[in-house]
Image (cartoon, rainbow, N blue to C red; front, side):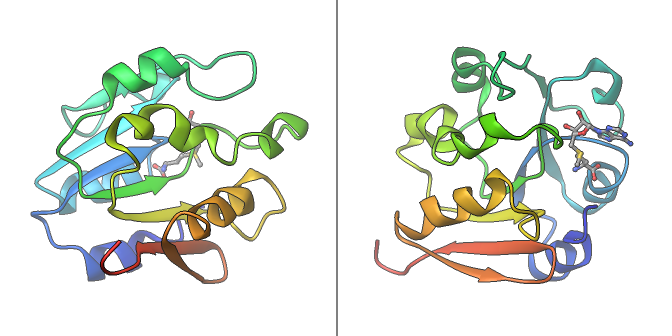
Length: 157
Ligand SMILES: C[S@@+](CC[C@H](N)C(=O)[O-])C[C@H]1O[C@@H](n2cnc3c(N)ncnc32)[C@H](O)[C@@H]1O
């Protein structure tokens, strides 16, 4: 639902390099207009190469998450904000296992790069909440809003 768009635009200037996980026509379009540089991880070609020049098209594995090797190889080094809004919602059991997969794949290469992470849809009872729990256990302070959670690295960690 991309409820975080206004918050992100108000709190992160155009010089911030955004790594968006899950592309579409809403936040991707809005952020392509706001940020000088952004990346979008996306599995579906239908949503790739539409609003900016840095789409990272990565297929999903059977468990519903991006293919780990391709994800790891594709993630850039120069991002300073992550928005987690993909891949897709709607299927249940695999998501509960995914909490730390997000970071044990691409992000492990960066040893959990310590940037702000916005997790969308944390109002749902799906894996999104587990991702937040994982971050809280890994040196992040997480603040819930109605629809999304703002996760920031604790100072000095
Ligand atoms: C919540 S959407 C991501 C939306 C994106 N952050 C935005 O607001 O532009 C999660 C996934 O659903 C798919 N998707 C994106 N836009 C869609 C749409 N309008 N209808 C159905 N699926 C969509 C994409 O594969 C995307 O990775």
